[in-house]
Image 1 (cartoon, one colour):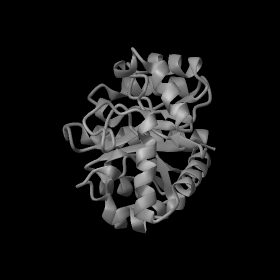
Image 2 (cartoon, rainbow, N blue to C red):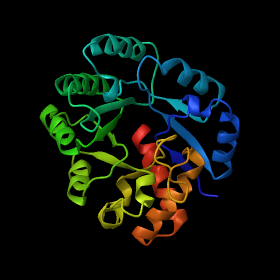
Image 3 (spheres, helix red, strand yellow):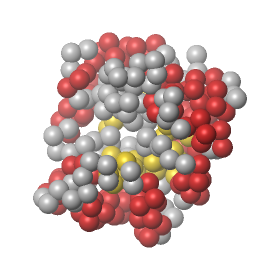
Image 4 (cartoon, rainbow, N blue to C red):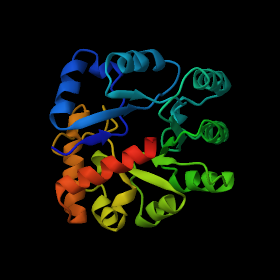
Length: 254
């Protein structure tokens, strides 16, 4: 069985509290070897670290999610910085920008993003980037930073072929999840032209469950549905998609 890696799953959230062991069992049954967990803010750290300690396949990241950036974001960033100095992390994430929910703290989002990107370079870690309704703005922020050592992934990519190619030119990967399976997701027009060597698989569990589970709680075992859809778009064997995207994920997280 070809192995897979879920590069983005919030499986420490309350939605998984009652059946996390079964969720992880199902993940292993479909061949998942690692699940990377992005942090949100101070409220998610304990649950995430507890899960990492209990299960070898669960790997934590450290960062401040853009939807948790507000007028007191410096306090949150101080905590992130403190944690970054305590141990080694797989990545700085989930960081980024979000113009979908609220534009009030856009300047603060940009500042928080830039600071965390600088930490990623300092600690030689990849960044895991959220950019809902703000792909172009986030690409521009990275271009302005102009640091070739900055690397990472644009998670939950739902943009155009042109945007995907810009991201790849900057040395980043694109994270593809459940949206790739949605009838009106638009990825059928984009993914055929995106380099498979720059794609990683993700679920963003518990959100964005792939078809035919759309609307249900997402979980890592559903990642095979994403890989299958990519294989159809790319006209590749499913096992090859799994092998290449797993190698990409290992390269991303080193």
